[in-house]
Image: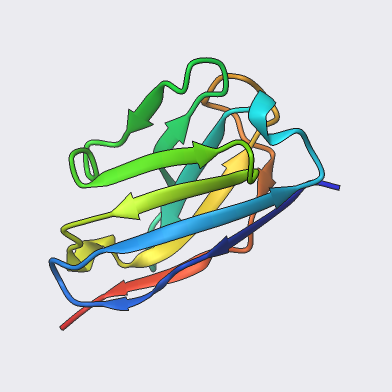
Length: 120
């Protein structure tokens, strides 16, 4: 079955960096688009980035554009999110997801999430 396992979260000071990983199994990773979401306390889950499978096109939410970078390693079936210049309002649980589609926008499978806390 489809499995997505996030890692790499933690506590970081404002201005710091973290790299999240999403290890996948149960499907042919290279064929499908992958996305990153986050959910802060009391807020709805929001899509912050996505990468397609065909040409590696990327999408970023305005709130993270220029600071976060999504990447994929098809040999390792792993998705990454490099997060730089972190701010306190980046604090959230971060999830990876896929809809087993080649394009972004629809998601049916989710990981369990990894907590990111940005605080001094």
